[in-house]
Amino acid sequence: MGRHSLSLYTLFAGALAVVLAAALSLTVSAQQAQAATVTVQAESYAAQSGVVLEATGDTGGGQNAAFLADGDWMRFDNVDLGAAGRLTVSARIASATGSGTVELRTGSLAGPLLAVVQTSPTGGWQSWVTRTTEVTTHPTGSQTVFAVLRGATGGDFLNINWFSFAGAGDGTATGWVPVDQARWNAQLAQFRAMTPAAVPAGTVRVPEFNATCTYSHSKPDDPIVLPGLPGASHMHSFFGNRSTDAFSTTQSLLAATPTTCAPAKDLSAYWIPTLYEGDKAVEAEGMIVYYGSRLPDPSVTVPFPEGFRMIAGDAKAQTPTPAGSPGQFWCAGEGGETGRSADGNWPVCAPKAHLTHQLVFPDCWDGKHLDSPDHKSHVAFAYDGKCSGAYPVAIPNLSFVVSYPTGGSAAGFRLASGMASSIHGDFFNAWDNAALGQRVKDCITQKAKCNSAGTF
Picture 1 (spheres, rainbow, N blue to C red):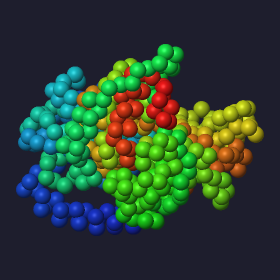
Picture 2 (tube, helix red, strand yellow; picture 1 turned 45 degrees about the horizontal axis):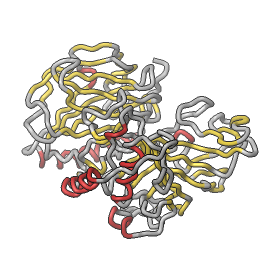
Picture 3 (cartoon, rainbow, N blue to C red; picture 1 turned 45 degrees about the vertical axis):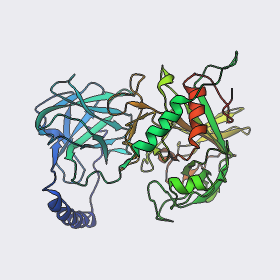
Picture 4 (spheres, rainbow, N blue to C red; picture 1 turned 135 degrees about the vertical axis):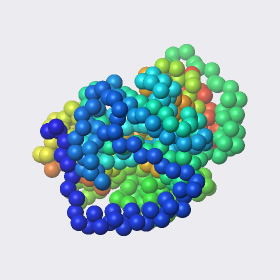
């Protein structure tokens, strides 16, 4: 178990936990008449395969299920899923590397899919986060639940401390932003009725279009994570909509027409943590926001709903990124990488090459929410080339490609959020619906490469 390192707790953290627990107990007491939350400790399985238990550094102590890899599973008997209606399913997870999903199935390993919990690195094997998804149709009462691990990157990729199952009305779903079904249905109808443009001969058959954006401004704001709290975030570099700040909403973005992106009908907000070389901020030369598809059948892709938002990456991830690390910064241009920074975490680029990064977002959506409490649980990466289960709706595969006018040195860089591993990006959709829909129809569903103008 040498790969794990348990965190230390201070007296202050313990006292704070007591105060929070007392405050929360008042809320829970007021809600018990409506619904109950059932928490299932991972170590309480009735049967398992591939699971090792270890002492956990998470709040409350006890044990967690560790060294979980693709194909491992646990069986939990007599799990009360409550009455019919909305069910919020949460998993307390930690991971230092790798990503995948936890499939929760009822009855058997191959039984009906109850929920899918998306996982990604959290910053360490004892850096715990709660990932949540929501289920509208599910078996009721006492059930046998199987947790089946599906790793996407090979090797051990996850620790699990507990699962919880919360019925409607217990207040655990705070942070879920439901899509306005009437508006979404109207947007979908508009999209379905669009006639795709004829694809000229010789067009590159890649499902893709883009928005080409330049740097707009910097603020210590985050209208997705910390809405209405100016100055509460680390410094972010914003691209696209020039009005973006802590108070931005769908309506404010759509009403503010100045943007640094082409096309002008993309009023979306895009942002990343500011890069520093020493104490000097280094702003990007530009950002290309690619909208594409990794699916074998991209024709199932639909546009983002108006007001949709999500985050990729993890600002709390503070782990080394030596050469060869997944998702690392790299050098684009003549000569490429010539060395590494003294700490090994950053590339040093040749004189004509520039520091670059590509950040990739999930491409499957639950079809129900514009946002979620962690800004990730309403989306997931495609599995086995398709969107299914709790995430049945294929959305454009968004990615940010950012280039900086610097090659770096042995001194390296830092992000406003910390180490290179903490790179993350935010997307707040404010496209004109018709412009976005036509590009998805022409370029993605027809598998044809388009430019920023949406033409071939």
